[in-house]
Length: 247
Image 1 (cartoon, rainbow, N blue to C red):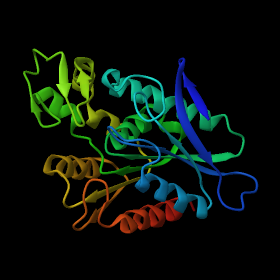
Image 2: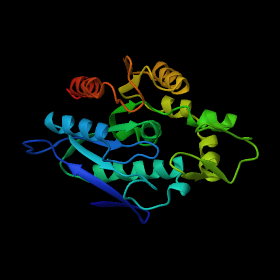
Image 3: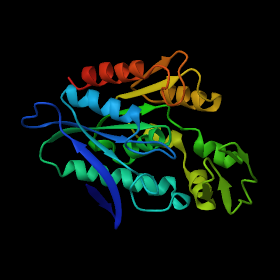
Image 4: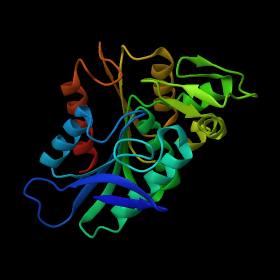
């Protein structure tokens, strides 16, 4: 199905829990930079949630997967708009009792920002390897293994698989202050992080955990950014936290 965000079609999958009857909580799941809603780790989280009484809404964000928009033109502002549109969609569903957010990497940063913007509607938030360091690195002139003058931005920034980002991505990121978003959200938070991830990312995830007022932090020893070593431990951490939090 498609969900419209100001004329932009977001490709999405809504799944209700096994043996569904009546109302239930829903978890919106957002992928990361260059990712998509059908990545194995996100499907694994979704399947686990469906088995434990939660509905899930996975969506491809602007410029990714089967959604509209060019990858080069995506920015955190556009993803924040996408996330708020997904929350509004969930609010319109009569079967939804509570809304949770879950995001990986840039999707983790996005749900941190969206939880601040729509804080009164979000029961809890899960950030998997959240790329919370993106705005600060953009202000310093270092992003995606590229260095640049933060005051004289390049027209394009190379990424992976021969893809490029436009300078608007950097311009937008430089204006975002994650600390302000953290301070605006008072609900329960779970941050999951592998110990073999990038040092800047691990440090920013720990800093976010320490700043949130009601946060739990799960380190998975020896795991990478996408949980390619211990995906089961990541899924178990999400299950244990959300089933306890939702009671």
